[in-house]
Image (cartoon, rainbow, N blue to C red; front, side):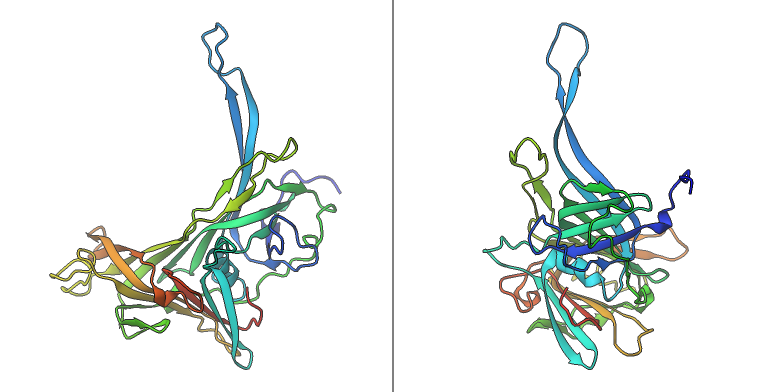
Length: 355
């Protein structure tokens, strides 16, 4: 067979595997294959410039390779069997319980452990782009940006920071990367099913009451750890990071809604929550309407949020309101853990193992 003049992106696939030992490929493990769009491998190779003066009106005389870490970014829909790994990669702990028959509940909460520096698990990223395979070890998740809108699928953009990749050609890809990809068979979830509740009472690890906001047309939820490489002098053959380190978590978001009342709770009245101090609970839930044997759903509970930066816009035939929010750490959203957290995530699926 002759060599093609271009390689097909549609042959791409992604395997994500938690590491038992940070920075080491678990050869006996089984990757979780996540259906993705727009995957991207970006080496962060730094070059050190020689700008020493040599009697000529020029600046750069040489550039020597410095330290390097690699970034990996992709988009994925909210598949109930694979998406929990992206939540655990930022929060840290998944407690799975059987609720009935083949139904399992995954409560994913923020890991607060001094002994482990409160670091979520690292991953080995196994990426094939249709031409080459790339293995990125020691990958620590940096962020997850979830978007949802009435006319779109719920979608998330995930970003990881990892060690310098090793590239392979077909036939040399290491086990278990060489196994046949077995991606999710679940339905993606359309955003029109989103139930957004604001207000209510937060206690005992849950939020009760609240008002369902049926006039929100789109939204965004951002979970960030501000992960960054830590570099030390590791030896002449290794210019990669000592570790990729996750910082404290921050959660924020945004809603866009139709102005359907003259009493907009964010921007009108003396108690407008985006103009005054008001710690308000928010719960965002998406449940797959196509389920039969089990229920697949995602719930994001934020028991204390401050709305801010509200705008009333008239770029369409009807008036809209845009409002941002930042969630506050609180003891209600820590789940089974200890301390404080700005978010508690719950996933229902048919998977018994914790992510």
